[in-house]
Image 1 (cartoon, helix red, strand yellow):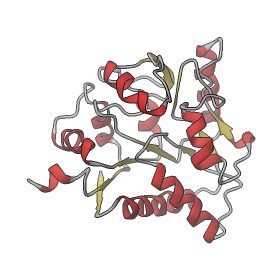
Image 2 (tube, helix red, strand yellow; image 1 turned 180 degrees about the vertical axis):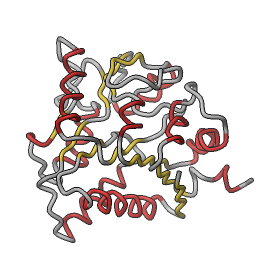
Image 3 (cartoon, one colour; image 1 turned 120 degrees about the vertical axis):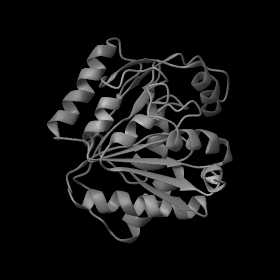
Image 4 (cartoon, helix red, strand yellow; image 1 turned 45 degrees about the horizontal axis):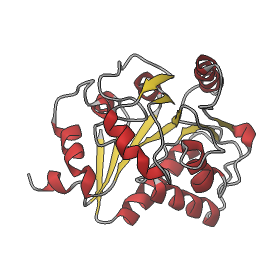
Length: 243
């Protein structure tokens, strides 16, 4: 595991973006799995800026969604796909042919999982998975107690996540299930980047890095990954610095 702590959210985001571009340059036709959420927003802004400024050819890049709420897809504001369309896919003019994403409105959710797994297998391996950290330690929609052996699956959403997730919607929304890549998918990725920001995440960051690895703290399972990089701003790392 590599740990990077930056003084500001902006410098953290820029450093993480440089890492993503560096690793994706190793495979110009590589597969990237991006997360939605507050913490990676700056990273995606930096990615767009650096790719545009440096005129990096990303025409071969492929993208597979990390997760999606059941009952939603890109047409729904607050969905994971809606967020990534706005923050990443749209600004980079990514072709729909290069994106595979869970459709939470699909009638057969098992087929959605199979579709995503087939896309990953078609492109060999996820080169980089970008993930965030939930207040309960979840990663993607792998909630506390989820088996680390699972690949893409239907997830039952923890009450903490249901409550916190309301921030993405203009009115109260029922979000009790999701579709997500599993811990097994993340462990099979070549690189995993965890990006966390803000004081509200400081305690769960401390637990992630200092407590024993456990299914009850799903993100801690990633500490066993050979290429796991953690990017924190000073606020998220504040309880680590007190030790």
